[in-house]
Amino acid sequence: VQMRIKTIVIENFKSIRRAAFDADAFNILVGQNNHGKTNVFEAIRWFYTGKGDIGELRHSGEGSSDDMFVEIEFSDVQQGLEQISNADNQTKLRNILLEQDVMRIRRSAACSKDREIYNPQKKDWQKHPTGADSTFNNCIPRFEFVEATKHLKDVSAFKTSTPIGQMLGGVLTQVLEKDQTYRQFRDKFEELFASEDSKIRKTLNELSQQVQKHIEKQFPDCSEVSFSVDEPSFDDLLKSFSVRVNDGVDTAAEDKGDGMQRAIMLAIIKTHADQRREDSLGRSFIFFIDEAELHLHPSAQRQLKDALLELSSTVDQVFIN
Image (cartoon, rainbow, N blue to C red; front, side, top):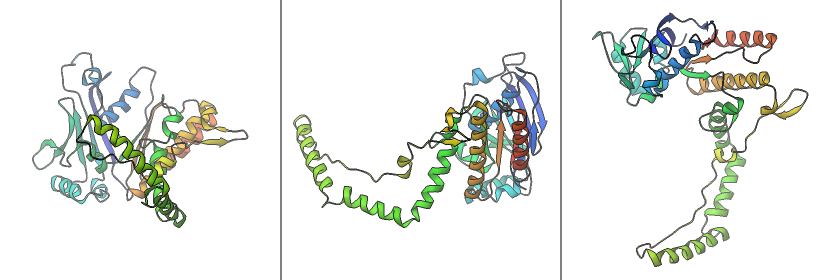
Protein backbone atom coordinates (compact mmCIF):
# COMPACT_ATOMS: atom_id res chain seq x y z
CA VAL A 1 0.00 0.00 0.00
CA GLN A 2 1.27 3.47 -0.92
CA MET A 3 0.07 7.01 -0.35
CA ARG A 4 -3.10 7.69 -2.38
CA ILE A 5 -5.83 10.27 -2.74
CA LYS A 6 -8.61 9.53 -0.25
CA THR A 7 -10.94 12.49 -0.74
CA ILE A 8 -11.12 15.53 -3.01
CA VAL A 9 -12.92 18.79 -2.25
CA ILE A 10 -13.18 21.54 -4.88
CA GLU A 11 -14.83 24.91 -4.32
CA ASN A 12 -15.35 27.81 -6.74
CA PHE A 13 -13.11 26.43 -9.47
CA LYS A 14 -14.27 27.29 -13.00
CA SER A 15 -17.77 25.78 -13.45
CA ILE A 16 -17.62 23.96 -10.10
CA ARG A 17 -19.36 25.68 -7.20
CA ARG A 18 -18.60 22.75 -4.93
CA ALA A 19 -17.68 19.12 -5.50
CA ALA A 20 -16.60 16.59 -2.91
CA PHE A 21 -16.06 12.87 -3.33
CA ASP A 22 -14.15 9.90 -2.01
CA ALA A 23 -11.62 8.19 -4.27
CA ASP A 24 -10.78 4.56 -4.85
CA ALA A 25 -7.90 2.90 -6.68
CA PHE A 26 -9.79 3.06 -10.00
CA ASN A 27 -12.16 5.99 -10.54
CA ILE A 28 -14.48 6.87 -13.42
CA LEU A 29 -16.20 10.23 -13.87
CA VAL A 30 -19.18 9.96 -16.20
CA GLY A 31 -21.38 12.79 -17.43
CA GLN A 32 -22.65 14.77 -20.36
CA ASN A 33 -20.44 17.11 -22.32
CA ASN A 34 -19.85 20.56 -20.82
CA HIS A 35 -20.78 19.44 -17.31
CA GLY A 36 -17.40 19.97 -15.62
CA LYS A 37 -15.66 16.56 -15.76
CA THR A 38 -12.48 18.00 -17.25
CA ASN A 39 -12.63 20.90 -14.80
CA VAL A 40 -12.29 18.40 -11.97
CA PHE A 41 -9.04 17.19 -13.52
CA GLU A 42 -7.84 20.72 -14.15
CA ALA A 43 -8.54 21.56 -10.52
CA ILE A 44 -6.23 18.73 -9.47
CA ARG A 45 -3.59 20.02 -11.87
CA TRP A 46 -3.90 23.47 -10.30
CA PHE A 47 -3.50 21.82 -6.89
CA TYR A 48 -0.21 20.30 -8.05
CA THR A 49 1.20 23.21 -10.07
CA GLY A 50 -0.49 26.41 -8.90
CA LYS A 51 -0.34 27.70 -12.49
CA GLY A 52 -3.08 29.79 -14.01
CA ASP A 53 -4.80 33.16 -13.73
CA ILE A 54 -6.90 33.17 -10.56
CA GLY A 55 -9.45 35.50 -12.14
CA GLU A 56 -10.01 33.07 -15.00
CA LEU A 57 -10.01 29.98 -12.80
CA ARG A 58 -12.40 31.27 -10.13
CA HIS A 59 -16.06 30.26 -10.39
CA SER A 60 -17.96 33.18 -11.91
CA GLY A 61 -21.45 32.29 -10.72
CA GLU A 62 -23.21 33.01 -7.46
CA GLY A 63 -20.80 33.07 -4.57
CA SER A 64 -17.82 33.89 -6.76
CA SER A 65 -16.48 36.26 -4.11
CA ASP A 66 -15.85 33.24 -1.87
CA ASP A 67 -12.39 31.73 -1.72
CA MET A 68 -11.41 29.20 -4.37
CA PHE A 69 -9.59 26.12 -3.13
CA VAL A 70 -8.79 22.51 -3.87
CA GLU A 71 -8.26 20.25 -0.88
CA ILE A 72 -6.95 16.70 -1.10
CA GLU A 73 -6.72 14.23 1.73
CA PHE A 74 -4.11 11.51 1.25
CA SER A 75 -4.31 8.11 2.93
CA ASP A 76 -1.59 5.64 3.95
CA VAL A 77 0.67 8.58 4.66
CA GLN A 78 3.04 6.82 7.07
CA GLN A 79 3.96 4.37 4.33
CA GLY A 80 4.34 7.22 1.86
CA LEU A 81 6.60 9.23 4.14
CA GLU A 82 9.14 6.43 4.01
CA GLN A 83 9.46 6.98 0.24
CA ILE A 84 10.46 10.67 0.55
CA SER A 85 14.09 10.85 -0.52
CA ASN A 86 14.82 14.08 1.35
CA ALA A 87 15.28 13.06 4.99
CA ASP A 88 14.82 16.63 6.24
CA ASN A 89 11.42 17.01 4.54
CA GLN A 90 10.41 13.59 5.81
CA THR A 91 11.19 14.65 9.37
CA LYS A 92 9.36 17.98 9.03
CA LEU A 93 6.17 16.25 7.88
CA ARG A 94 6.41 13.61 10.61
CA ASN A 95 6.69 16.36 13.22
CA ILE A 96 3.35 17.75 12.02
CA LEU A 97 1.46 14.51 11.41
CA LEU A 98 2.97 12.40 14.19
CA GLU A 99 1.25 8.98 13.97
CA GLN A 100 -1.64 10.15 11.77
CA ASP A 101 -2.08 8.09 8.61
CA VAL A 102 -3.95 10.79 6.67
CA MET A 103 -2.72 14.16 5.47
CA ARG A 104 -4.89 17.07 4.34
CA ILE A 105 -3.36 19.51 1.85
CA ARG A 106 -5.00 22.46 0.10
CA ARG A 107 -4.22 25.20 -2.34
CA SER A 108 -6.41 28.29 -2.24
CA ALA A 109 -6.73 31.47 -4.25
CA ALA A 110 -5.92 33.37 -1.07
CA CYS A 111 -2.59 31.52 -0.86
CA SER A 112 -2.02 30.20 -4.36
CA LYS A 113 1.79 30.20 -4.32
CA ASP A 114 2.15 27.90 -1.33
CA ARG A 115 -0.03 24.98 -0.33
CA GLU A 116 -1.10 24.50 3.24
CA ILE A 117 -1.13 21.41 5.41
CA TYR A 118 -3.62 20.76 8.18
CA ASN A 119 -1.88 20.47 11.55
CA PRO A 120 -3.95 18.01 13.66
CA GLN A 121 -2.21 19.12 16.84
CA LYS A 122 -3.02 22.81 16.41
CA LYS A 123 -6.27 22.01 14.54
CA ASP A 124 -5.40 24.67 12.00
CA TRP A 125 -3.82 25.14 8.58
CA GLN A 126 -0.18 26.12 8.12
CA LYS A 127 2.19 26.55 5.21
CA HIS A 128 3.71 23.26 4.13
CA PRO A 129 7.17 22.88 5.66
CA THR A 130 9.24 21.67 2.70
CA GLY A 131 10.37 25.04 1.32
CA ALA A 132 9.57 25.69 -2.35
CA ASP A 133 6.05 24.75 -3.39
CA SER A 134 7.28 22.56 -6.24
CA THR A 135 9.45 20.62 -3.79
CA PHE A 136 6.35 19.44 -1.98
CA ASN A 137 5.34 17.41 -5.06
CA ASN A 138 8.24 15.11 -4.25
CA CYS A 139 6.52 14.28 -0.96
CA ILE A 140 3.21 13.12 -2.46
CA PRO A 141 2.26 10.75 -5.30
CA ARG A 142 3.46 11.84 -8.73
CA PHE A 143 0.79 13.48 -10.90
CA GLU A 144 0.34 12.53 -14.57
CA PHE A 145 -2.40 14.30 -16.54
CA VAL A 146 -3.25 13.05 -20.04
CA GLU A 147 -5.43 15.70 -21.63
CA ALA A 148 -7.87 14.84 -24.40
CA THR A 149 -6.22 17.52 -26.54
CA LYS A 150 -2.68 16.27 -25.91
CA HIS A 151 -1.00 14.78 -28.96
CA LEU A 152 1.59 12.04 -29.23
CA LYS A 153 4.33 14.54 -30.03
CA ASP A 154 3.71 16.19 -26.64
CA VAL A 155 4.70 12.92 -24.96
CA SER A 156 7.21 11.39 -27.37
CA ALA A 157 9.23 14.49 -28.31
CA PHE A 158 12.59 14.38 -26.59
CA LYS A 159 12.46 17.18 -24.04
CA THR A 160 13.36 17.28 -20.38
CA SER A 161 9.69 17.87 -19.55
CA THR A 162 8.26 14.90 -21.47
CA PRO A 163 7.93 11.31 -20.21
CA ILE A 164 10.07 9.92 -23.03
CA GLY A 165 12.71 12.57 -22.38
CA GLN A 166 12.82 11.81 -18.68
CA MET A 167 13.01 8.07 -19.34
CA LEU A 168 15.83 8.28 -21.87
CA GLY A 169 17.69 11.17 -20.31
CA GLY A 170 17.74 9.57 -16.86
CA VAL A 171 17.83 5.85 -17.49
CA LEU A 172 20.14 5.64 -20.49
CA THR A 173 22.59 8.14 -19.07
CA GLN A 174 23.07 5.84 -16.09
CA VAL A 175 23.66 2.93 -18.46
CA LEU A 176 26.19 4.87 -20.50
CA GLU A 177 28.13 6.01 -17.44
CA LYS A 178 28.90 2.33 -16.75
CA ASP A 179 29.70 1.51 -20.37
CA GLN A 180 33.38 1.21 -21.26
CA THR A 181 32.84 2.18 -24.92
CA TYR A 182 31.10 5.40 -23.88
CA ARG A 183 33.92 6.24 -21.47
CA GLN A 184 36.42 5.68 -24.27
CA PHE A 185 34.34 8.01 -26.46
CA ARG A 186 34.50 10.73 -23.81
CA ASP A 187 38.28 10.27 -23.47
CA LYS A 188 38.68 10.54 -27.25
CA PHE A 189 36.51 13.66 -27.33
CA GLU A 190 38.66 15.17 -24.61
CA GLU A 191 41.77 14.35 -26.63
CA LEU A 192 40.37 15.89 -29.83
CA PHE A 193 38.74 19.05 -28.47
CA ALA A 194 40.13 19.87 -25.04
CA SER A 195 43.74 18.77 -24.99
CA GLU A 196 46.20 21.64 -25.41
CA ASP A 197 48.07 19.52 -27.96
CA SER A 198 45.08 18.97 -30.22
CA LYS A 199 44.98 20.74 -33.58
CA ILE A 200 41.36 21.74 -32.98
CA ARG A 201 42.25 23.28 -29.61
CA LYS A 202 45.13 25.24 -31.13
CA THR A 203 42.95 26.49 -33.98
CA LEU A 204 40.25 27.63 -31.54
CA ASN A 205 42.87 29.46 -29.48
CA GLU A 206 44.17 31.25 -32.57
CA LEU A 207 40.66 32.31 -33.59
CA SER A 208 39.80 33.51 -30.10
CA GLN A 209 42.99 35.64 -30.00
CA GLN A 210 42.03 37.28 -33.28
CA VAL A 211 38.54 38.04 -31.97
CA GLN A 212 40.02 39.40 -28.75
CA LYS A 213 42.20 41.85 -30.67
CA HIS A 214 39.18 43.25 -32.52
CA ILE A 215 37.17 43.63 -29.29
CA GLU A 216 40.13 45.23 -27.51
CA LYS A 217 39.99 48.16 -29.95
CA GLN A 218 36.54 49.06 -28.59
CA PHE A 219 36.94 47.72 -25.06
CA PRO A 220 40.58 48.07 -23.91
CA ASP A 221 39.85 46.25 -20.67
CA CYS A 222 39.01 43.06 -22.56
CA SER A 223 42.12 40.96 -22.00
CA GLU A 224 40.96 37.55 -23.14
CA VAL A 225 38.38 35.75 -25.28
CA SER A 226 38.34 31.98 -25.23
CA PHE A 227 36.48 29.44 -27.34
CA SER A 228 35.69 26.02 -25.95
CA VAL A 229 33.79 22.96 -27.08
CA ASP A 230 31.97 21.24 -24.25
CA GLU A 231 31.68 17.50 -24.11
CA PRO A 232 28.32 16.59 -25.66
CA SER A 233 25.76 15.53 -23.09
CA PHE A 234 23.66 12.49 -23.73
CA ASP A 235 20.61 14.77 -24.01
CA ASP A 236 22.21 16.50 -26.99
CA LEU A 237 22.77 13.17 -28.70
CA LEU A 238 19.04 12.40 -28.48
CA LYS A 239 17.71 15.68 -29.89
CA SER A 240 16.88 13.87 -33.15
CA PHE A 241 15.05 11.09 -31.32
CA SER A 242 11.95 9.79 -33.11
CA VAL A 243 9.33 7.08 -32.64
CA ARG A 244 8.43 4.64 -35.41
CA VAL A 245 5.82 1.91 -35.32
CA ASN A 246 5.48 -1.15 -37.54
CA ASP A 247 1.92 -2.47 -37.44
CA GLY A 248 2.25 -3.97 -40.88
CA VAL A 249 3.30 -0.60 -42.27
CA ASP A 250 6.50 0.94 -40.88
CA THR A 251 5.96 4.69 -40.43
CA ALA A 252 6.61 7.47 -37.96
CA ALA A 253 4.27 7.21 -34.98
CA GLU A 254 2.82 10.65 -35.75
CA ASP A 255 1.59 9.30 -39.11
CA LYS A 256 -0.55 6.59 -37.51
CA GLY A 257 -4.26 6.98 -36.82
CA ASP A 258 -5.54 8.87 -33.78
CA GLY A 259 -6.38 5.63 -31.94
CA MET A 260 -2.90 4.18 -32.40
CA GLN A 261 -1.28 7.47 -31.42
CA ARG A 262 -3.29 7.67 -28.21
CA ALA A 263 -2.48 4.03 -27.38
CA ILE A 264 1.24 4.69 -27.92
CA MET A 265 1.04 7.81 -25.78
CA LEU A 266 -0.59 5.96 -22.88
CA ALA A 267 1.89 3.08 -23.20
CA ILE A 268 4.82 5.51 -23.02
CA ILE A 269 3.40 7.13 -19.91
CA LYS A 270 2.78 3.77 -18.21
CA THR A 271 6.33 2.66 -19.03
CA HIS A 272 7.55 5.97 -17.66
CA ALA A 273 5.66 5.28 -14.44
CA ASP A 274 7.25 1.84 -14.13
CA GLN A 275 10.72 3.29 -14.55
CA ARG A 276 10.23 6.30 -12.30
CA ARG A 277 8.77 4.06 -9.62
CA GLU A 278 12.06 2.15 -9.52
CA ASP A 279 14.01 5.40 -9.40
CA SER A 280 11.71 6.81 -6.70
CA LEU A 281 11.92 3.89 -4.28
CA GLY A 282 8.41 2.70 -4.97
CA ARG A 283 6.73 6.11 -5.07
CA SER A 284 3.22 5.84 -6.48
CA PHE A 285 1.68 7.64 -9.46
CA ILE A 286 -1.79 9.14 -9.91
CA PHE A 287 -3.03 9.12 -13.50
CA PHE A 288 -5.75 11.51 -14.67
CA ILE A 289 -6.81 10.57 -18.20
CA ASP A 290 -9.30 12.89 -19.88
CA GLU A 291 -11.70 11.08 -22.24
CA ALA A 292 -9.72 7.86 -22.01
CA GLU A 293 -11.81 6.21 -24.72
CA LEU A 294 -11.10 8.97 -27.27
CA HIS A 295 -10.35 7.67 -30.80
CA LEU A 296 -10.35 4.04 -29.60
CA HIS A 297 -12.37 1.20 -31.10
CA PRO A 298 -14.57 -0.53 -28.47
CA SER A 299 -12.20 -3.53 -28.38
CA ALA A 300 -9.25 -1.19 -27.77
CA GLN A 301 -11.29 0.59 -25.08
CA ARG A 302 -11.72 -2.70 -23.25
CA GLN A 303 -8.01 -3.44 -23.54
CA LEU A 304 -7.20 0.01 -22.15
CA LYS A 305 -9.64 -0.58 -19.29
CA ASP A 306 -7.87 -3.85 -18.43
CA ALA A 307 -4.45 -2.18 -18.59
CA LEU A 308 -5.55 0.67 -16.32
CA LEU A 309 -7.20 -1.75 -13.88
CA GLU A 310 -3.94 -3.67 -13.70
CA LEU A 311 -2.05 -0.43 -13.15
CA SER A 312 -4.33 0.55 -10.26
CA SER A 313 -4.24 -2.93 -8.68
CA THR A 314 -0.69 -2.36 -7.43
CA VAL A 315 0.39 0.99 -5.99
CA ASP A 316 -0.94 3.46 -8.53
CA GLN A 317 -4.28 5.26 -8.75
CA VAL A 318 -6.30 5.98 -11.89
CA PHE A 319 -8.96 8.60 -12.64
CA ILE A 320 -10.62 8.64 -16.06
CA ASN A 321 -13.39 10.69 -17.64
